[in-house]
Amino acid sequence: MTKVFVGMSGGVDSSLTAALLKEQGYDVTGVYMKNWTQDLPGMKCPWADDLADAKRVAVQLGIDFVVFDFETEYRQKVVDYMIEEYKRGRTPNPDIMCNQEVKFKLFLEAALEAGADMIATGHYARVENGQLQMAHDANKDQTYFLYRVTRQALEKTLFPLGEYDKPTVRQMAKDRGLYTAGKKDSQGICFVGQIGIREFLSEYVQQEAGSIIDTRSGKVLGQHDGAIFYTIGQRHGLDVGGGLPYYVVGKDMEKNEVYVTTDLNDGALWPSQVSLADVHWIDKTPIPGTYQVRVRHRAALTAAQLTLEGDTARLAFEHPERAVTAGQSIVIYDGVVCLGGGIVQSTKA
Image (cartoon, rainbow, N blue to C red; front, side, top):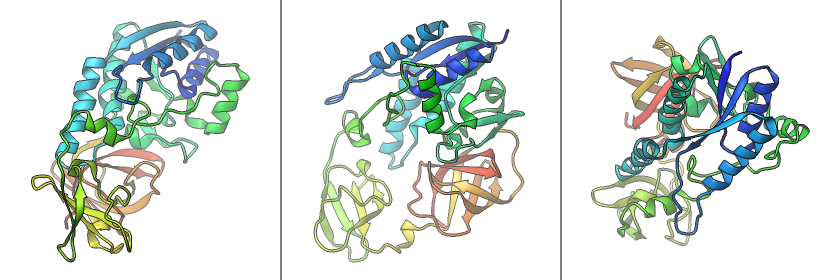
């Protein structure tokens, strides 16, 4: 009997994943990954409640249950990475790094060492012949967050929810009487919980006031409390008042300045090409050509011409894309197959 360790976060998706695999005849062990336990001002970390929920479901299903403690590695590989990227003026995606470094590396290695044949998670995605494919439900598809996972890891991974949409998953969980069937989906930073990025970063970086400058006139419009908190395309939170809305189009971390404009057609808001670094291909390097790309989670797929230059890649969009930001990931698809992607290095021509 194939032994599968299921990452159980205490949510409905991973709960149903464990239930389905048990029904399909796998020898299932539930695993709670303890990644973050620190409370923050105004926010109690939900890890203990999530652990209790995961454990309740494991008892319901009659499966073994263990806790893997990855808190030290999570802080180093995910949290420290995220903070350093923001300090550089970039906008990282910690969920992608969590998948790369924790769920499909540390968790996989620990599971195999403990006797598992495979791992499983509640991600909405599909794997076929070692290829990562989009989920049946395009609205819930999570391949954007999985593009840095290796083929070797995918060959040891099951995604039972890839064929279902969210309402069906909730109903299936309800039909089985799972304790978490009605639990709301978690929001926020990976496992950090219900907290905004500004509040989180405020705990780790010193806030320094600086100028908000109109790029066209050069006029100082007001003050901000730290350029680190602003990202390209941002409209809210500028507090410069009156007239047309302003949008962030750039920032200088050394000068601690944020640059804004009222011009929605400003070229800095609509790059036509980007260069990608830290490129990762799941299977093999694709040949240059036109592919579909996603510039952020839930963004519509758009056509782009891919060219390769050593360890970097360049994408020329068929139509300019709004507010593409250094540090973000762009993921590349060939039909339903996720080929990989990279991290935006520059949006300069």
